[in-house]
Structure formats: C-alpha cells, structure tokens
Length: 165
Image (cartoon, rainbow, N blue to C red; front, side, top):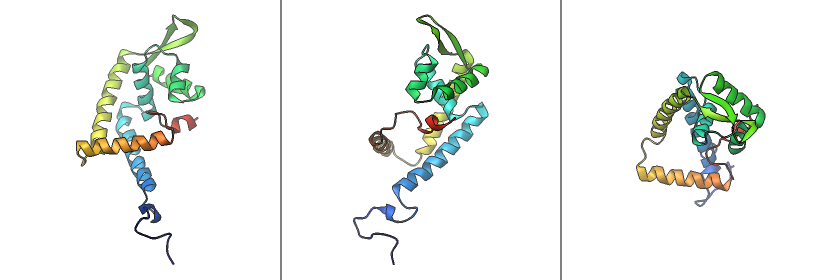
C-alpha cells in the first residue's frame, strides 16, 4: 500500500508535510509570528504598520479611500484608525475638497514610529532571506509574486485583514 501516486515526475507534495504549499504555510506562520513579536515593543501590530505605511504614501486620503485600497471593510478601518489616532500617530483633519470626509495624516510621532517600524521590518526581511544570495532572493521573490498574482492577491495587502472583525 502506498501513500499516493508514485513516479519520478510526481511533485514532492505527494508526501505529507513535504509539499510546497505546506512549506510556504509553515514558513509564513514562522515569519509572521516573528514579525508580530518584533513589532510588539513598539505597541504596533502588522496591520497598524500597514495602515501607517499607506497613510504616509497617500497623506490626505479619506478613511474610506484607504479602506478600499487595502480591501479592509469600513467597520474594521474605523477601529484601526481610531486606535492609531488615540495613540497620537494619526490625525483626522477636515478635507478641503469634501466637507463630509476627513483626511488622514501622520503626526510627527506617527512619522517617528513608522521610521522605527521600517527599520525593524527591513532587519526582519534580511533575516528571512539570510542564506540566500541576492540573485536567489530576487528569484524567490519573483516566483512568489507570480504565484500571488495567479491567485489574484492584492500586492501589499494581507487577505486576512478583510476577514477580521
């Protein structure tokens, strides 16, 4: 009796725990758990880092526009921005183009926090790819982007954010 099909042309995924999907999931769990842990001393979660990054890139955008760009439901977006505003990292300002909307801006403390979080994230990225040459890292990144694109994932947006409530 065998565990599944056999043959030289069969992928490694026929062995439990040896498939590409399992390995990606295993690495994803370890990498994301570590990232959450290294951001924790700043009082940030990965989703806060994501929102700060996007606000910095599109200062003055509305909360609604940011939520749409990140595929985060409006109810979830309100809570994320509220948390960042309460911490003094983000402020809502009157939008000169639309009196009904509020424009999102980083505060000076928000800019400092984002800079520190970026420093941590870049160190984490280096640790994740330690042991790979620059060429290997680029190749891995390219292949993973192709897989993500084929599954219609939004670049830079974790699909779990849309599921959180």
